[in-house]
Image (cartoon, rainbow, N blue to C red; front, side):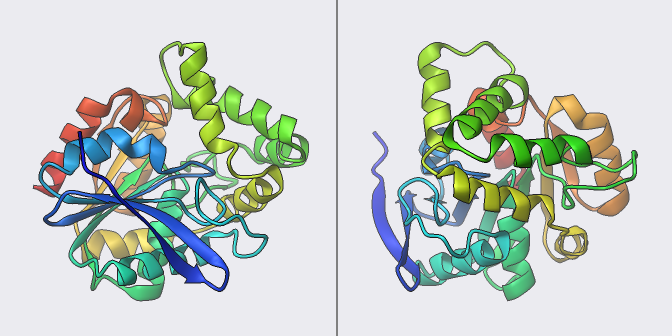
Length: 271
């Protein structure tokens, strides 16, 4: 059994962030995506803690961190990440952001630079979520994104319906058991719908193209993209950040469904 150390770190007045830590050595920091929690990275914590110091966190209003009405945006999440790295005295870290967690990582280096960062891994997230150009790698069409915000993220049932559909159609490629699906949905629903709406809007209106360019020049960077949009994502990444290494694997939650292959890709990159 992996020995996991747990603690709460104060990031703001009245805001504590839940953090799990295991292993020792050079640190790897995993940042979950929109409404998800430390729990989704347990296979990475178990694997990488054999050779590295692994840190996973619940962003504010996620999982076991404090649920608050303020700061539910990715600028604040970048500031919160700084508080965690500073409190834990993390240096020479590999930052691994998944989905909107990539926005947190880009925002962190935008605010703080690369003194604590050795390399960066971005898991299945374009640096700009929306665009009117058909050639760009984006989260979806403007009409689809508007529909999610205005129809689904208005109450608890809508949030549950949206995340359930997203899990089964985009995140996971295989058929899930009822128990698996319930567990993944429940991780997301720990963030209330009225906060999920704020996070969704913040993420969709973010633009970190300049930070992506700077990161690719400052430190080694890796993008791991899902198969369903890989052609567009690879072409876009090669044009925007040609120094960034790109790998293609599974669906949006490939690190959970294809954990062995994912861990192998990240391990090869950081070595």
